[in-house]
Image 1 (spheres, rainbow, N blue to C red):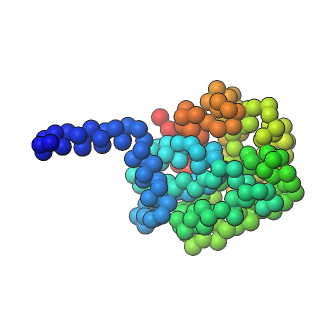
Image 2: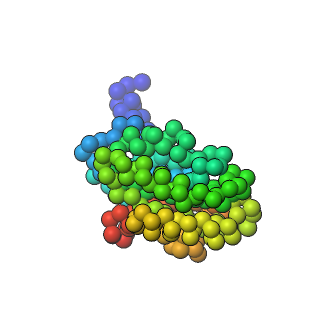
Length: 225
């Protein structure tokens, strides 16, 4: 194959990667391991609504080149330390702290409304405060945002929409009051967006964009175009 064809192939692959979002995903992967000192580092902490969706990629695209966004989501993880999969017991929790973030977005709680994962939530507020405290103790003194996750639109028990609404959401508000931290209220903002959550819990591509836009507005106090 001659040099011209090789060059055209390379250009074609670059376009394909960029258009598919793979380049952004690679950026986020490397960003988790090697925080850049000349960028504003944003750590997205959460469960599968963070780790399994494109919202961190979309957020980075909105924020632009002055930011580095790290995806530190763990599917099935909870705030509660009494569950089968506490976020604070996951290795990615340590990675999020080593990222030395300037901004931390915490979106947890959905799995705490799943009785199969977290049957006992008596210590939810106490454990959430511990999680917040671990990030507050970092030398970067990050700005921390607590997120009320999107509604649970399904009527099943895993997670339980009624328990989520009546217990988890008020508990997040209590944590925000106790720690004097701002809330990003996706629960209300996406209340009429069930079409973008095919399984009732996880956003599709359009839902991920909506999440990213709300978080972008909170971070920058600007409405994305």
